[in-house]
Length: 271
Figure 1: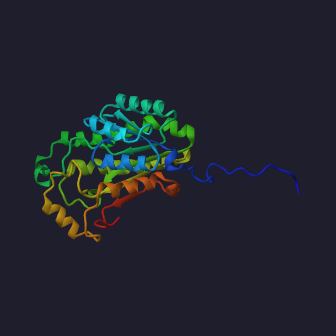
Figure 2 (figure 1 turned 60 degrees about the vertical axis):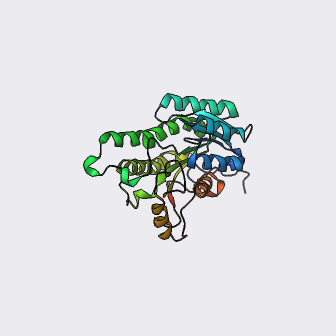
Figure 3 (figure 1 turned 180 degrees about the vertical axis):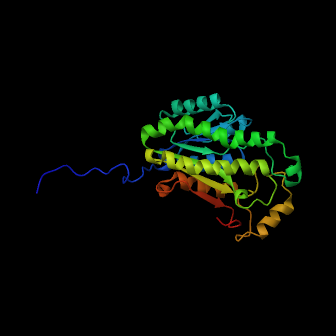
């Protein structure tokens, strides 16, 4: 029997790296209000350090950050401006003393959930598609690109994209919004394949209509009631409930989960 060093696992069979939520540095786009604020608060309540990205909601982001001294930081983060994205990521890393480990692509650009006011196919303007692609595809791409060097350096990263159950169940004519979220779902899966060898997971949490955010405030009460009646849980999902699923993908319990899309809508839409 020879005295040899123990066999080191190869890159292909090494267990994925995991970090407790309290050890993570998180950047959340659109993190100061609505769903983004619920996600920011969920991470902060579990001990994470969170850069609360904002574009038009500076005051709300700063108030939320002030509730968690030393762990909350409001940063300007316009997802249509790649240079500002890089500055926001750098500011978070400098403030918290280490690179960003976790990204939540949540920001929604210029959209209101009001089916009666949305254009049908004959009136659909390509500029509307371009606007949603900028916010839901190009913005997340820029935020991921700004953060992956630090993630690769640590051998750990979590990217969670916010999607929509309309991709699977397009019952409302939100053509521009739904097309952009479908593209983001495709990137979720291709990014997962590309970044997995570096210990970075990429997943999506897809919401139905949430009760209530700024974006869904224009939705008639009758629509909320109809959705609740058709949902196995008998109610409309809240932003806090969706935030729980985001935490799961960032947590050690999801260390072997990547490239997945979890629909969180009380069972309304299946898979």
